[in-house]
Figure 1 (tube, rainbow, N blue to C red):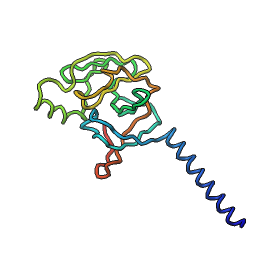
Figure 2 (figure 1 turned 45 degrees about the vertical axis):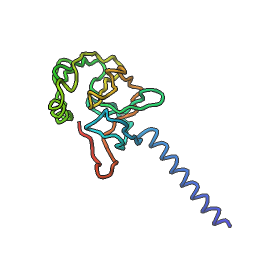
Figure 3 (figure 1 turned 180 degrees about the horizontal axis):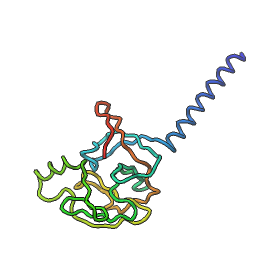
Figure 4 (figure 1 turned 135 degrees about the horizontal axis):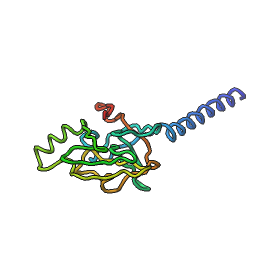
Length: 176
């Protein structure tokens, strides 16, 4: 009887430790997320499953997950850091007056310009307030992002994401 009781206690401890580790990892380090919608196309597809890393500060062009409101998390790309002046002119990104290429949009820009008139990203200028990020979806004509909802407070950012793990045949690391 004592042997059975001891074995039960060992299994219970192992189970509780596993639950505790899973809780700590999901709360402080990593979490899964499902991409919903087309705002990050062509980089990410609707229903892609990704891993969010909750460690470290997001950098320019990182893909981040943030709390858009009390019910929804959004996934977008960081375009502007606190204090940056962001300008789009003739479909080119300027940060603090310096032009930046967006290689992740090159193919999409070609496809868009062959089907429609005008730029993929309409012209605008803004300054990113301190303590916030300016984020945009890669599907610039179909994205609810900082152009619509305003800059994202740093404390609302859940983390960054690069790894698509589902669908299994499309596993990839998303490059900048």
